[in-house]
Image 1 (cartoon, rainbow, N blue to C red):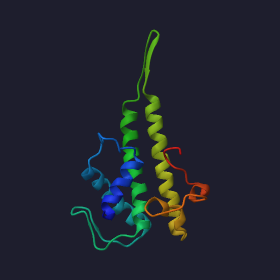
Image 2 (cartoon, rainbow, N blue to C red; image 1 turned 60 degrees about the horizontal axis):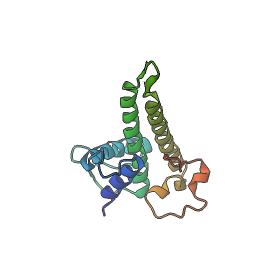
Image 3 (cartoon, rainbow, N blue to C red; image 1 turned 180 degrees about the horizontal axis):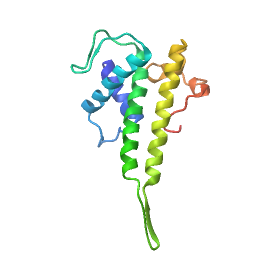
Length: 158
């Protein structure tokens, strides 16, 4: 499996789109990933040459870069979902019956904030030379006593 296919698979799991009826196609996730590659390359000063129109790199990216980009892509997706949910956040009450969709938007906002914070924390760690904060997502890793004790939480609440 190539690193691109692995990134799509991991991103799909992080955003909870791994059921039989996926919300996002592989090509859509790949577009979001390439946008995140571009942004991560700029924000993290990695020095890659990335062509978004042809979705290509001049060289194979490192696992550090891919991991940061997956966090960025998860943030882009969940923040987009939050914006969409916020547009539909209504509350209707008719006698004893009520419908309240504001909680859905709040949950999406929390996910958006968590992924954005994880990306920022991992980028800060990268700049400081500490790869343990973001290494586990793409590499074989022993979770006993791992990075979750360092303030990084699983976005799904595990």
